[in-house]
Length: 479
Ligand SMILES: [Fe+2]
Ligand SMILES: [Zn+2]
Figure: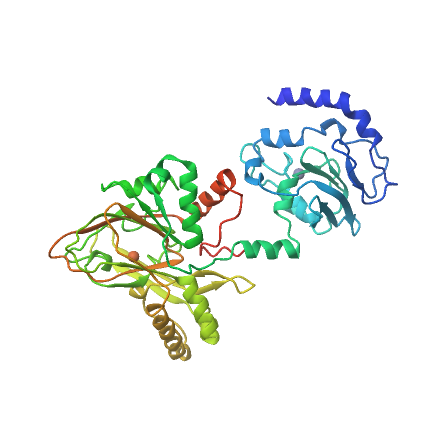
């Protein structure tokens, strides 16, 4: 393959060198050159001495080469729009590259930033595409010597401080990672959660999820946007929750309760979920550093003779935003206090003693909520300075009251054959108490790790949809 590419390059050299050379910019060129046609070379060179058509011999091969090396997969950026280049300009003696795109937007990339994401063989490993930049050779003194649109989807650059190093960048990758003020605001807007207005849980069928990638995309998209969805028509057999969730991730998220867990009322339960009592709204297992991501509960049996047992779901992020509006000081205070979550259980095959102290609210530097944690049944002993104890319980009590009286709530009595899936980092779940003398209520559950879920949404968005990023999933991602 590689030999063939070299030969192809050699052929291109002989057939295109005249065209390229005739349109080649020299040091005398202006710093910004408009593209003249589909085969023209857009070029901006400042300080290029003894200019020769130095890129001609590989002009058409950059994209092919980085794809063949496994350094770049264009499916990840196929939906990026307007990535053709109108003009390139080196600014501040090559400290910055200014790109004007086909859609009229502009980006400025620092020379040092470009060093950090270069796709050349020196900077990215073959097959994995992982970064192999030696950062001790990269500094803010980095300066661009030249930049060129190769007309085949890549930008190439030369650096003053690193002669012979040809930087290679897919244009769609650059456009996708533009960090102008406007682009960053758009990205923040695109990942904002919106909250359900009608509290209707979106539904998909088991058949479409299992049998088609479009059906799977429909499911994960709804789950990402609303935080909850129901898969209906799931066969009422043990093991089906695993089968359905393995459509998202090939390894489910194990916890101390196993790969899957059976939710049935039993004597001497190890968890309140395995009783018939009320469960207040909570997320599962925030005593883990990485709490479960998606939770799925497949209803295998729910006899009509059983009274109660409805599930309740509330968007924790909506509650937190409401609390912030109503109680800004308490909100700020609670975002600094390590809330103790704990599970202590020695009467089991692998005794458990887990504690984790974390703030209830995590924000990025703009104040956007990126993570919220809540489980009233797993609250441990507060460990703070004495003067903070009473202010904590004052603020904590207000939040507790708000959650348990929050008007926007999904309420649903599961039917056999339904599997409800929800983002455990975002949508709290609770359960009304039920009577279990006269029938059976049997749910089987599992978890999917949150990053793997988010990855699935992005991949399917790229392969089946419009390429949009997932909205926030509550994983503390700071963007
Ligand atoms: Fe739970
Ligand atoms: Zn490189």
